[in-house]
Image (cartoon, rainbow over the protein chains, first blue to last red):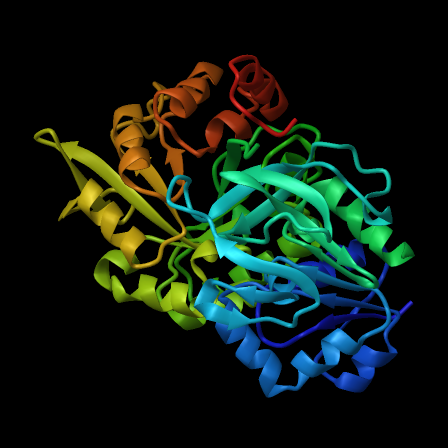
Length: 193
Length: 251
């Protein structure tokens, strides 16, 4: 199976590569359109600030390519947020795959949220074998509100989407590659989609 | 619900763990990766690697270690020690570190915090602050607490937050090594006055100290070294007690 991790200079992609290697898959890190189009599964990572990450996507034409992909795509953290239509972070227009507007947590809570939080109201085979209220590792200051595409909910200040899905596109706010054995199970499930 | 984090800290010199460790079940307790894997399996929420080597090869040795940890460990980890530039951080993050911690270099060049958070995001910038009380005032110290500065702990902490730090790792030099508990009064003040997570460090000796630092010290995470290395406290036992005290933990 060919797994392509989109490498556009935004984030810690080594960790994702290593997480797949731990389950016996050797993914390719690439920003090459052909390689991405041919892959069986695509990972869209992202760490950092939304508007600068979006600029990097535009510079390589990936902003046009990603929404046209037909194979399963998994956006992680900022990757998931960029798959939404808009983010308050840098007033950034996203890829518009998910019908959600990403907002910032208020100063009623500590920002960023850093640590292990629970996920619940789990939907889709992405969470096959994952218990309700399982813990996942999250680091973020912005969140996607609950919407019709929500497939997992976490609570920090309010209930928000810790995972989204539309057709072949999946996104997790949490980092499966850093979330111990439960996170590994999510990656294994994604490979089976 | 967001849980409170338990973070073992491993001191590293020339790619090996420094502080004596007491793990009979480990093939090589001096290998940070072996130890890190064991902590991850036993319920640690995160790990901190603090590099204290001073050789010319330290940079390469540290990068090799970061790569090996990222390859083998499936929980987040922070790397600190001698980090003083955007380039240092770039290579550590690219090698798989999730966060870096800066300490003396941030005091000497506060703009570094702005530069790091602008380039890599606040979420990976931990500012470590060592402080102790002098005439009732909490003063920031450098070089592992040896060199005093004029900086007031709370003013410096607010400044690093404004400059873009994502987290503060506060070590009380008055408490460090005492095993008498964390500096909960100062921690609570930091946690109340700032709006970023605070990691408590220095003074852990028994399980009740962790309960206290989460309740009285309002800490978001607690870091310790020897109590874990010498198996005086097992992380899972610690978390069971925290849970019975209604402190949210990942178990």
